[in-house]
Image 1 (cartoon, one colour):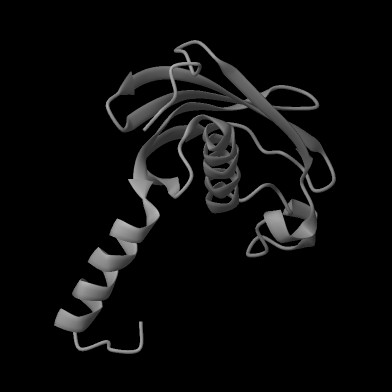
Image 2: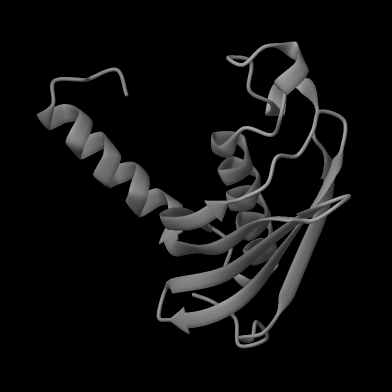
Length: 138
């Protein structure tokens, strides 16, 4: 469960470099810019990491919704700052407001929701689904 010390309004930030692995390739070398799927992954990671000190041992969180507008091109080797603000706590569900800035401008805004899970219970549910699907090796 989420500890009482985590409050709506808490802000977490991370700055990272947009390396080659975070960029698109389909428009050629001159247009290697931050790929939206990688941006979403980075946002999810910041949100996940921000929760780890506020949940119980044996728990973690999974993403359940992403709603962003990626409105600016961030060039290869630029820095981005991902700011996430805890907007809502409702039981085991949390929602973050997102703002992402590169060295020049804001390039993304939106929200991301996560759900706190008991890892062992989730493993059990996934194993049951794998069994029903005939995927015994999972």
